[in-house]
Length: 225
Image 1 (cartoon, rainbow, N blue to C red):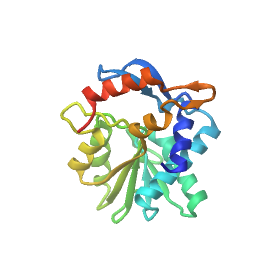
Image 2: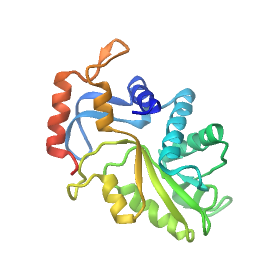
Image 3: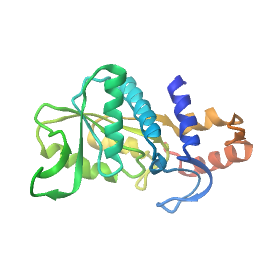
Image 4: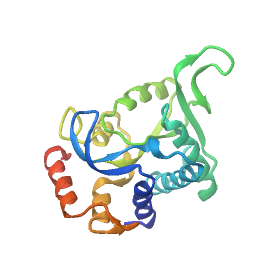
């Protein structure tokens, strides 16, 4: 596993973004782990997060694209932090863009924040985690309404690797099949479990034998095919 992925797994844990225990998800599923990207709250955390996203985007899509689109609201700070990191790490100036939840009809009018999106633009979409694909249902038509744009791909921080609400595929697999663009993540939950299993970090073992059994049992029921 790449060094930045190992660092990112530790970063999620130390930032209290990735937790292990007993959680009830919005879907009603009982999960032994939970991720909340809203727990990244400091400048240092956002700077590091942007760097991890930038490295994953570079590995999966390169940096030959024009705009990084972060759907409102969580995608806005993700997009800003990541375009700054892409500039810092790779010397490429990528523009950021986001949508408004409500169309503004005065001043800087329209549905978009940041850079306009025009014919011929290559766009990467950035999100925290995708469990249902609902945000892409909203984002895709917004982007396509701006012109003849090419969506290079979608990047998320963690691929939970569990089936969606409508079938045996994961949300990322469903998005790729439905919309025709690739999807990727900084890390998968499989990589997280493998890396943290029986590993002491900051004086604690987050995934011991009992937690590993709980995660395996969860995926036996909800794991994507």
